[in-house]
Length: 415
Image (cartoon, rainbow, N blue to C red; front, side, top):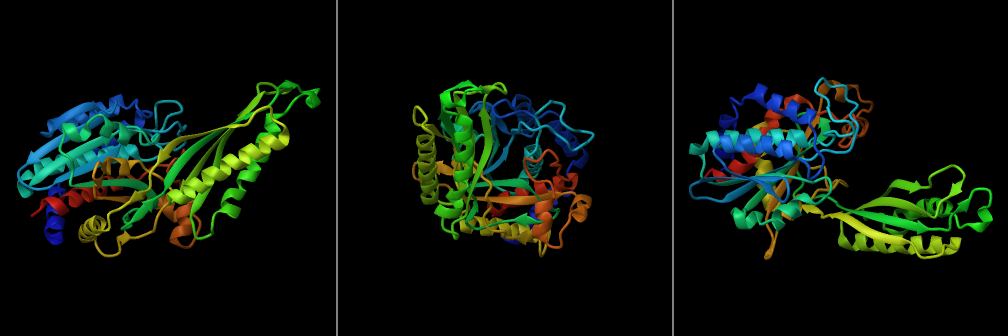
């Protein structure tokens, strides 16, 4: 079955319209759109899917796209790409760099949409080689963790068939030609937390009449570094990052409040809950120590679930990828600390639908070769990664990224 799916995938992708797909990618990269504003991107994807013969709906969950191709008896396979960009100012120097100030496809979602478009078109053109149903999803707002839940909440699986298996992938740093699969936990949970420290403002010349929230926030940031190092066991992966501190308006004004924004990454609910409890305790303690007039506000914000591949599904997809791309191309790097909301597409009343989610390496060869380091992980840490203003996937990944989706789908649709 794996061999037949691989052969069929190679046949269906042998004559891909590579220049047209590269043009689509460049166009999407030039015109990035932030979460839930992906109108132009959704229209481009929806138009291509409609032209390929899919029953297509736009505006699902806000700006999402869902498209269906029924092709006889067989399972329903969902293929997904996320569409949103980031509030990052591009510094790649590419001739097709972002034309929108302060907005950039710094995470590869433009490449994801290109891959999905090429795969959907190839599978539609070769529908005489497989049977079943394809559900193609262009998801908004992955970066904010909202999009998958919004699409499901907007009746995705009432308006379209519920899938038997879900497939997704992500561009990642690394030498072109590797496909990272982990048959289990592959991405971590992520939780945003906002803290407001309440002080008593006043003139900078009379600090004794104030309670300075800036000083308290500074102590708080330092003390928060002990949550992972002193409260979480070394065997438990966890990360705490303070991403933003904001306070004050002028040099000589002690403000009335300071804001601290942080993010935690965990691989279990138990560690997440312990970290949140520690953050609340430390924030309350520092504010009490400083004599703040009231307790701090601690608000838990956007949360991404863990991404846990169904082992049987991931083994099946990894096996067909190995046949398509050859020996030595499949690796298991273990779980990453990055996060995704893809798993929310798999949630339903009876439990969780099986899925496979993997990475496609995309660093240009000259960038990879020039990076310092002697082994894979040293170079991996040195090249521009996702969310970097220098992140620029190699266009040579357009074809293999299409093939991963096509072959993954055919692992279920070739009987």
